[in-house]
Image 1 (cartoon, helix red, strand yellow):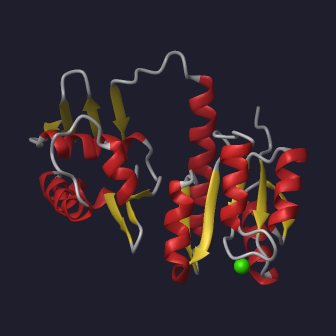
Image 2 (cartoon, rainbow, N blue to C red):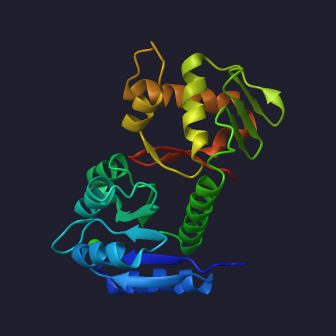
Length: 235
Ligand code: CA
């Protein structure tokens, strides 16, 4: 049984709004459209979309304000939200991710990448709600990557990866949410239990090292220009 999922497109440029709508409906998603932050809040509150594509530069209420309200005032932590924004809004994108947006797509985007992101996020949202109680938090399996947190071991394509403690927590964090973009700040605060003095620069160094150790799998760790990093479940 396939239940149709509804995506709310918050975008004030009619051409982009139409482009996104076209590609999502072609993939079988229902869409709702709006061009301002206040309309977006109204729809989220009353019509409960399954996912939100959020532009940041909007008339009246900005995308950042929408995020704040949804995540902190309404406490809707589980609603998947993807920021779709121009690269020039880099600071806002980082703020948006740190306020709890799940992902970021820079404009101009490829429709294929957009659809893949929507699919991945909706899939993740439905697995996390249905398997919450049986999920083994200590074992992460993403494609050919396996991380056993209890034993502190990581394998790629069956070969053990020899990682430092901080590289291990870095990879565990990224692989815990494939496709999600983490800012450097989020990586720093997510690498718990490290005595290592983690700085933004040291994140970049450790990313380079983990990539090298993963060999052919190293390119699964993507650099998101100006923002941070993400782990892809597919090359
Ligand atoms: Ca805009």
